[in-house]
Image (cartoon, rainbow, N blue to C red; front, side):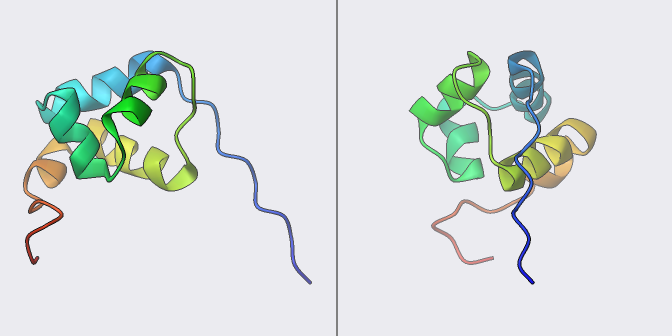
Amino acid sequence: MKTAALPARRWPASRISEARNRVGLPQAEFADLLGVSVRTLQDWEQGRRNPSGAAQTLLRVAILHPETLRDLPPMDEPA
């Protein structure tokens, strides 16, 4: 029996900016780290769109443990 996925909870735009500021990256670098476009990140930060559930999890990590995201290699480098 399949169940429908629950919609991602609404994230306040200020929390998204907080996550980016905690990691200490400009929008372009933070967007690249999350695997989204700068436009998508801007839409999140301005409250026009809501991050997906997976993105929300990464944003929570950014707020609670920013060093974890800072230590990740860029997407184009092997881990």
